[in-house]
Image (cartoon, rainbow, N blue to C red; front, side, top):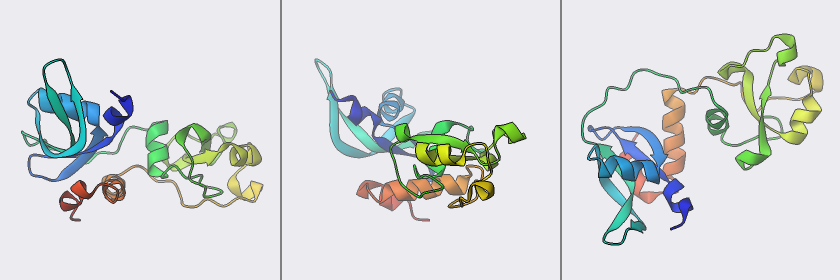
Length: 174
């Protein structure tokens, strides 16, 4: 069984059918098998044991409604790269996560904070070129001002991912 299939994104719906998250197929399968969620849509992939074949879901729905607090996501490298769509914020090239770094817009050496508003996805060449300077000092321009990862950002990402998965579209109506 290819672990790649277990990493595929799955849309998570609240009991009300409102899209609330995206998780890996492995996590979605665990939620379905535990009886916490039901599979609303299945992908073409399956996993099997000696006695059973289980189709991997592409959309799951929680069986009990979860109140989602007005939250921001945890500050992490993965979430910064997702927010910036795996795009260097200086040269605008889309790259795999392994080829991107995080850049402090206001360098740490100048009391720049490690915060949503001061971190951006950046390729190695641009990060080296910028060095310990501000973008203005380095003659570089940011693609967009960094902002916290909000519910709006989450929904935007779900819509973008939904474009590649036709089964998601009917749940992404906003």
